[in-house]
Amino acid sequence: MSKERKNMVKREEIEDLLLQYYEGVTTEEESRWIEEWLSASDENRKMGRHIQTITLAANVAQVSSKIDVKKALASTHRKMRHKKTGRYQRFFRGMQRAAAILFVPLLVSWCVLYRDSDSRMAEMIEVRTNPGMTTSIDLPDGSVVVLNSSSSLQYPSRFSAQERKVKLVGEAFFSVVKDDEKPFVVDALNRSEIIVHGTEFNVDAYRENKIVQTTLVSGKVSFAYLDGERKKSLLMQPGQKAIYDIEQNKVVVKKANVDVETCWKDGCLIFKNTPFEDVLKELSKRYNVTFVLKNPALKYNSFTATFVRQRLERILEIFRISSNIQFKFVEDDNINTEKQIIEVY
Image (cartoon, rainbow, N blue to C red; front, top):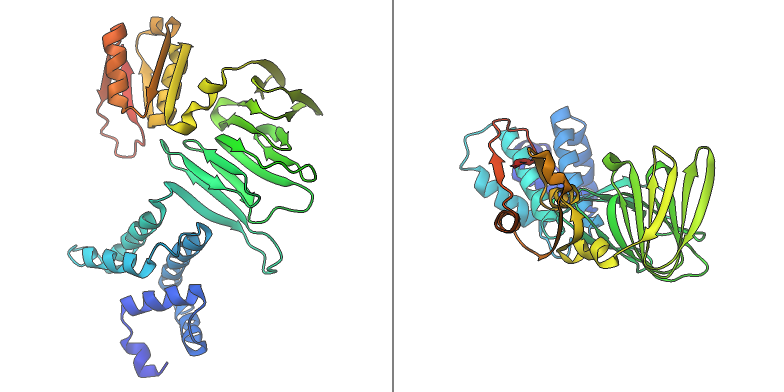
């Protein structure tokens, strides 16, 4: 690229070149020019990192064939031209919008955690769901994971020859492909593990709860956990639920209602004589809201109900009509508040 050409390059052209550069389709001369441009300033490097993130996310999500990143950027630029903000503010807002376009079909955030320069090494991929959202993930062995709200799953792009290991924070439903030679291991909180050969099961392991709950639908799993410094293990049967209290290093196994425990993956909520506090917890997780119980006596109530893909307002209206429970949506002037606050009377 000539010196005159360098001086005449427009921002849109730079972005196009960066996209091509991170996709590996630039010429040798263009690649050399981009590398010089990136090293010229911190602002240039910051722009490059943003576009690299978008390109990499599209490749990891395996949706690049369905999404035209250039068109996403072009559309963003058209909208930005009508705004009277600084050019760097316009660009970075544009990057955020383009990233949103990439992630909308998945309702999930993707990022590559580790990539070795040796192509034989597997990439570590992390999938995170947004609050109130769920997503389905196809693992390299054909197993399927449905990830619940505000959860994350880490897994390699290629499983090792010895085991198929993933790491979960939050809640997920697993449908694992049977492989007698290569067990499937879910690494959860406090070094607890669910060891599987082929089955369906649910794991609830949110950090804030300090409890790991595993419900076995079919097949068999071993639940391994820490008891002090010692590692213990128990074999579960279908229809059982193991509850591991991290603080007390104690595990309780009881009969589970499988439909109640796993219905969330189908967009349902099932309550069967469920304490009202637990009802509010499930609603909070599903709809990304915070409930403030103003009437403590309500916690002793229990409810039986089934909701299929209902809006939160409709569910609260049903509780109001059936049980005279009142809900008040609180206006919060703090723009940094992530969740809607609802008081319960």
